Structure formats: C-alpha cells, structure tokens
Amino acid sequence: MTYAYLRQVPGGKSLVLQQQSIVGFALGRGLDIDKEVVEYSGRNRPIEERKEFEEFIHSLSEGDDLIVDEVWTLSSRSDELVKIIGCTISRKIRLFVADRGVLITKETPLGQVIPLINEVRENEERRAGVVGRPKGSKSRSKFDAVQPDILKGLKDGKSVSSIARELGVSRSSLKDYIESRDLKSLAQNIFLQMRDPIKRSADDGELLICPFEKENRDKTIKE
Figure 1: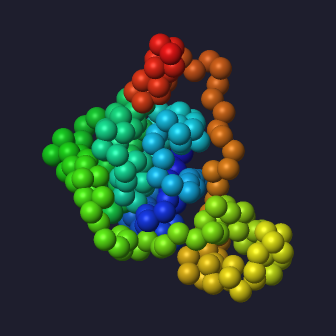
Figure 2 (figure 1 turned 90 degrees about the vertical axis):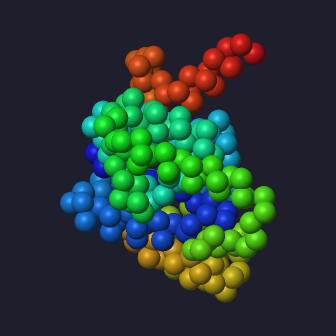
Figure 3 (figure 1 turned 180 degrees about the vertical axis):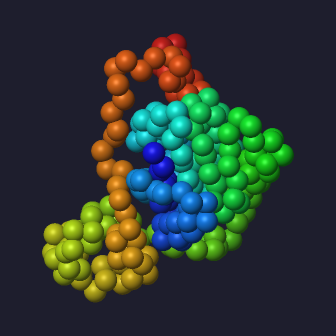
C-alpha cells in the first residue's frame, strides 16, 4: 500500500503545494498512491499529543510506502524526527521525501539522511528569530479549525453557501478562505481524510512498538 501523508499546521507549507509535490514525485517514480492521509492541527504539537499520527504510523505494515513532501511533515523537531525515521526503518516501511527525491530505508547512506535532520535542527534554532512566514504558507484563519469540515463539504459536492450555512459563517468570508487555500482543487484529490483514529489490533506486540511510543509508555508506567 502506498500512502501520501500531508500535514496542515499554522505557518507550514500549504496542503495544495504538498499535494502537488507528492503527486509529481509519485508519477515520476511510477508509484500509484492508494490513500492520501491529511493531519490537521491548530498548532505545531509535540509527538505525544499527535495521537492520530501515532495510530497511523502503527497501522502501516512491512512493505508499505509512505510519501511526504518534506521531512518536517513528520515532525519539525529533530529529536522526534530521528525517532520517527527509526520507526519506519524498523517496521521496514519505505519512506520517500519528495522534495529531495530521497528514499529512506536501512540501506540508505547516512550521508543522505543526516542533512535532512540537520536542516530541521537548524530551523528549530532559527524559529524564534524568523520574521515572516515560509514560502507557500498562509497566515492563520478562524476557518483553519474547521478546514476538515470544509474539505468534506466540497468533496461531497456542496456549495459554498451550503457549507457556510452549516458552519454559521459568512459566505463571502468562507469563499475568500477557500480560494486563498485552493481548497476546491485539494478536495477533488483527497482519497482519505484523517478524522478518526486508526485502530490497532489487540495482538500488536513489542515488535510493533516504535521508539517514541515505547518511550511514552515507559514514562507513563513510571508515573
């Protein structure tokens, strides 16, 4: 199974740009995307608060492919990124980073992986002093919190007026938001939205526990 993974966070690259990058990369590699998964968040949360993301990672099986636009999609924190990459490697999941054309497996030379992690680390260090927003990002909007509902409505063929009435918001404001994010184009191409946690089997054992989950579990036990 091949998954495209997109992540919407304030100040991050837009979903549309992520999607365009991933689709172009997949076509170039001859990969057929089976499911597109989108993670929404009103803020850049640490991994222990991204339960749906952990559920998704643990739903993957050996031999699955995971495509992201940039490594920050997985995490914008270098320590978390190391653990997530270690998780995909230990689970024998092929991780593709579209913007760099990199495939990460246990056979991938460290010289290809370390620069990606260092870039995230450098961004961490610069974050406090950065002025403005990254290229391709959008300012925060009150509609960000209900973007999944907007996308679902558009995907179901509802009009902007209908969605605005359901959300109890101004049609003109919603129309401007949809156009600024190009959500109609995005909705037409979404195969799967991450809204409900993916359930793990009760049979999952220690071998299916990734480093970051084991760490959190052990911490809970100690407390």
